[in-house]
Image (cartoon, rainbow, N blue to C red; front, side, top):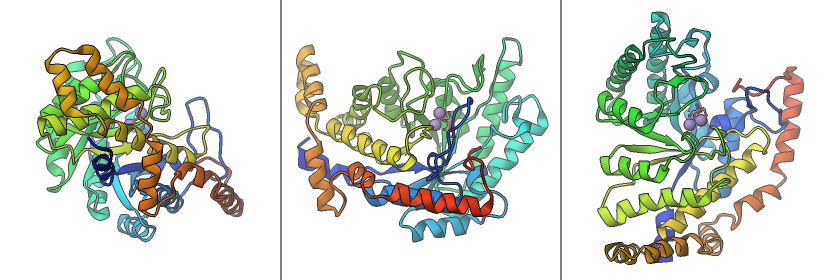
Length: 397
Ligand code: AFD
Ligand code: MN
Ligand code: MN
């Protein structure tokens, strides 16, 4: 479409940032603490609000129940604080993988106590969502096994389906359940929700308000993610995305840092589903799922949000009518050149204008990197930690 129309579409392209992406996290080999990293929900809200202030496109923050709503923290107060800072609480992410009781899984565990604990935790998460006014319950499971013969795969499948159906029906009207898939890690032999087909089936069985969450870092090498996205779109089962990228595993790398053309092709399927097939894509939840061990947290989040905007805008510039003609006449090179022309279009200039027009920084990343906020927060938070005698990492751990 024409660049002016494309830019007006960008007005409703909102990207949710993850609370866990502002805290010190790491890999299973350790974590590198950052003085400016957030530790409390207040500091995470402060950082998410900063990202939104600089980019203008990140009005919501996803939360992780165990890390952001520990016992004693009132969800309604957290929601109120977010509003005061100019953002809102977005998706609610239960934690079904960290507690010792989940050693052999949560909803699919052979251990009834584990399944009961998972049930109680998700019920509490639904209640938290009610109190924060969130309408997305986003579920990722580490459930799986590490060795062949370890457990009964069919029993696990049935237990997972039963739990998801029960939790779906426990949600208030208007709330959506997102079922995320991941081929491996931390389970090394099988994951109970390993691919899009399993997530699709579980979501269908759970109920009409359950959909699939595509984490762009959760595919085996060679997977055609844009094909999965097109299929889910046409089935009305694409709930949303967790933006990150991978070179080898679920590396939580910055989206587009490995293969920006692949991300463009994903966005192209969304744009063409809407323009060519009239599929409603407005309810897709665009969420970032990253927690970088080395990059400064806020800088990395701004970089991801800006990258997603650039690649989505490029996809919006695809002339759908010309593409359809090329496809109809099997002009393969012509069709491909239409894609490539849009992908190689320079969009930073029009984007800068679009941002200026809306009172935002023309280059959010450059503006943030020169703002001095990182050093200010590092000083304030280091002093705060010292005063508390706190030397550990973020509340992610
Ligand atoms: C990890 C998991 C999954 C989940 C995220 C937040 O792989 O992507 O969505 O943590 O819980 O990255
Ligand atoms: Mn994810
Ligand atoms: Mn992941």
